[in-house]
Structure formats: structure tokens, C-alpha cells
Length: 69
Image 1 (cartoon, helix red, strand yellow):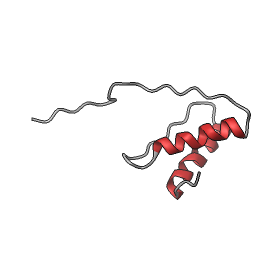
Image 2 (image 1 turned 135 degrees about the vertical axis):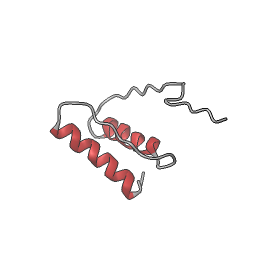
Image 3 (image 1 turned 90 degrees about the vertical axis):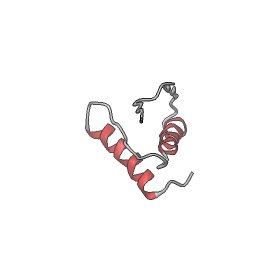
Image 4 (image 1 turned 30 degrees about the vertical axis):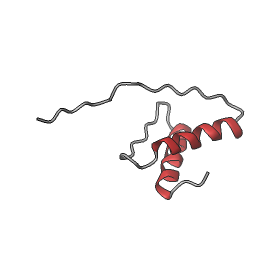
């Protein structure tokens, strides 16, 4: 899959974080920027390059809910 440059930068930043730090990385991208594609690329790499397994958990409630009146 061909990622856009900012998506590839996010993947590269996550890998850099994992190589150089001992805590959990987080990628913050705006709505519509392709966070799912970034996750798919990392998952694909884990399976194809490192013979890994993937479990993806997702919440069903909104992280932040705003009410306008």
C-alpha cells in the first residue's frame, strides 16, 4: 500500500519511538488523515516482516462527546 508522505512520516516516527524509547508511542492525526491506513501499515509490517501476530481493540464510545445548544 502506498501511503501519503505524512502517513509514512507517522509510521516512521512510531518505529523510531519503538527503537529508542521504552514506553508506548501514540500517533495523533486529524480527522480524515488516514489513521486507519497508518495502523494497517504497521500491522502489515508486523505480520509480513517480523512474522508477528496482531490484535486490534477499538472502543465503541466516543473519546470526547460535545453537546451544542
